[in-house]
Length: 78
Image 1: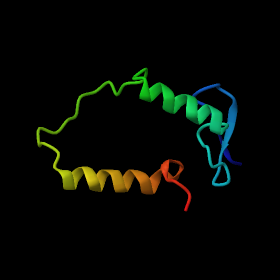
Image 2: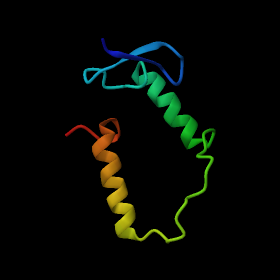
Image 3: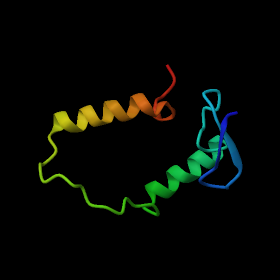
């Protein structure tokens, strides 16, 4: 039985499966609405960073690469 979650934008039920390219969103529209909310700073991460070590360019590049590998919907199709 597939896992079912609520779409973060419209609260519709969404099956969490590989074929659903917009998961956890129900559609591209809801995904873009959420992205717009982040861009307008309507969403914020509530905790400050835990590390006192400043982030270097190399560390940021590594974090970005890891993020993109796990979040394919942010990558432009080839």
